[in-house]
Length: 243
Image (cartoon, rainbow, N blue to C red):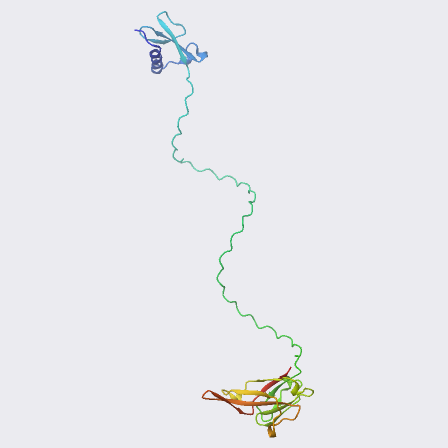
C-alpha cells in the first residue's frame, strides 16, 4: 500500500505528539525544518537525516506561521489584593476661561424691619421766614394777647366785642394785602367746631375796628338737621399771617 503525502504528514504529527520526539535534535535542526523517513509500504516514520531505498524523505517546518489573533477574553474578576498607597497630588491645572454670565435669580423675600434708630439731635434754627408779619393770638383769656415768641410785625390786638378782634401791623395796609387766618385747638370748645374768618371791612358800631387794622371774627358752628349755622363767640385762639 502506498501512502499519500497528507497521510504521511498526519502520521508524522501523531508520532511526534505520542512519542515526544525532540525535533530540535533532528537532522537539519539549524534550517528550521524537521527531516524524517517514511516507509513506503507500512508508513512507519522515523526522524533521520538520510533515508533507505524503501523510505520516502519528508520534512516540515519546526514552527508553523503565526495564526490570527484570537477574540478578546472575558474580563476577569476584580483582584483581591490590597490597594496601593495614594499617589502624590498633581500640579494645579491652568485656570479655565471665564464662563458666560448667568441669568438674574428670583427676587428674595423682604427682610424683617430693622430696629428703630435713636432720635437724632435737634437741628439748628432756620432763618426767619419771608412773611412780612405773623402772630399767634391767645383769645382763651379775658384780655386777648399776642404770643411774643410767635409774633412778628403785629404790635397790638383788641377785642371791642365778643368774638371781634382788631390787630395792628404798622406799615402794612390791610386793604392792599391778602392775609391768612387759621384755627388752633381750643380746649374750651372740645367737641364743638369753631371758625375764624378774616373780614374785608372794618365793621360798624361797637364791632368796628379802627382804620388800618385787620378785623377777625371767631365763631362756633352748630349743625341743625344738616344746616350749619355760625354764632359769634369769644375765647377762641387763632393765627394770622401776612405774606
